[in-house]
Amino acid sequence: MISFYWPWLLTALPLPLLIYWLPAKQRNASAALKMPLLINTNTQVVSKKDNKKSSLIVLSLIWGLTVLAASRPQWLGEPIDIPTQGREMMIAVDLSGSMQIEDMNLNGSTVNRLTMLKAVLGQFIERRTGDRLGLILFADDAYMQTPMTFDRKTVKQMLDEAVLGLVGQKTAIGDAIALAAKRFDAKKQTNRVLLLLTDGQNTAGKITPDQALELAVDKGITIYTIGIGADEMLQRTLFGTRRVNPSSDLDEAMLTKLAEKTHGKYFRARDGKSMNEIYQLLDKLEPIEQDQQQMRPLTALFYWPLSGAFIVALLYLLYLSIAQRLNHNITKTSSFKEQIND
Image (cartoon, rainbow, N blue to C red; front, top):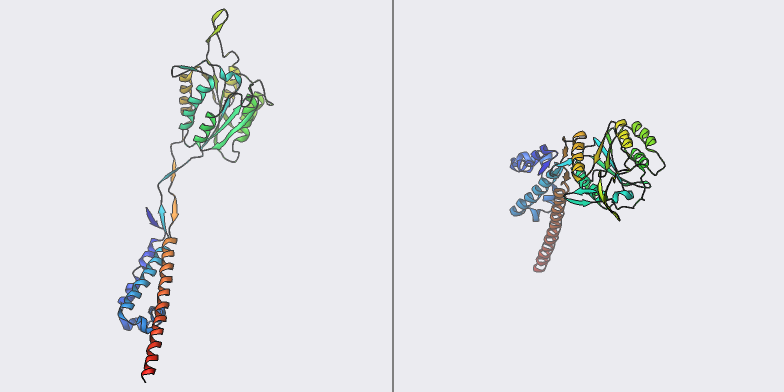
């Protein structure tokens, strides 16, 4: 819709009509109300009744466009949600070699741990409207794949494009926590949340989990840890099929400590269903901001009527100039004929 920043200026629109309707004596008595000289530049051209009427129409049009521009018209766009800045959530995903173990059940199919994580975590990311999300991938080292952003689609895309072996085969949990702590915005007072997903124990990196924990506590970061992996799976050998525990390397004690010391919580994801339940619980523990602020973008439109007034004035001046020349030529021709006749 169109609105005006100074709508009261529109009351000046009928001013030329008021001047036109004033008695002739009153118009001539006040210099402030005299018609512009532009109309009286050539009495022979403008003195005619039709020309006076057209001049008044043109000048009124210029006046109207100028007043319209002065009132600052603007286009008010559709409401747009402004992302709130109440929470920053960093997601750290384990890409170690053990994430390729196919012990997870997802919608009735057996898939590897990373495939299940992408499918369920992607839905969780899409729901986090209003949160600034970041993505860290870690194995031998920890890397910032996506810095803090409101663009959830980009975060999900970067997660989908992650592949095993991209950053090594080991597990640098301490480095991942330390990197997240450094990347949180220190200038803003926000709820800082780290979601750490792993299926093993710390086997690499320059910083131990205990050292990283101290840094997280100092920064006021809440850590939610998720241990991934089934409790048992069937494994075929030369001597037949046997049951094994594919999550024997999962350091649940360490993950529990990281969560409790930072006022977070440790979760155990044994399949796609339990993983989805964990994310639904996280939505309750770290609720999505509901009070979204809105803004309506404004686009200035004053230059359209202002340009129109300039063009009309330019064309009118051009018309008067041409008419004056024609009139001058006609007058000169008439005078020449009179001299010949004499």
